[in-house]
Length: 134
Ligand SMILES: [Zn+2]
Image 1: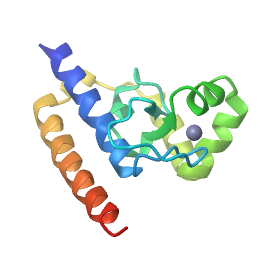
Image 2 (image 1 turned 180 degrees about the horizontal axis):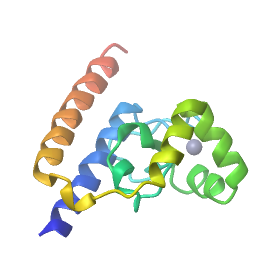
Image 3 (image 1 turned 90 degrees about the horizontal axis):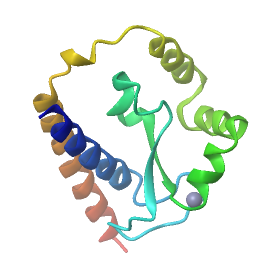
Image 4 (image 1 turned 60 degrees about the vertical axis):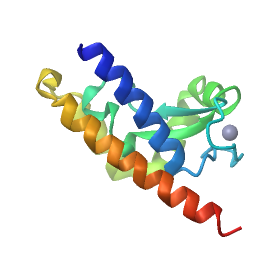
């Protein structure tokens, strides 16, 4: 049951991140149409870090075939990009927190899903409002 809700959380979280980023790759600036599967949600701290798995600061939209692969293969460039996106303080804080033991069994998945769904609706609304200006 937890696996299903995690899948749903990942799906809706990733969608909300892409709407927040206006369906634009944060590395190269390429703009995608809403729903394009070639734009991916990338996590700075890997998804196994549950304390950051559904944290909006931890995720960014990247081109699936180019930027995501390119930057994953270059740890130095990734680190630089992360600091540009988050700032050094936030990166240090995340690095520190990731070393702590995190009881992910205590996550209230239902509640989290509700929060992410609300955020998704807000991001879609914002996106559509901004798009309709042009
Ligand atoms: Zn890109």
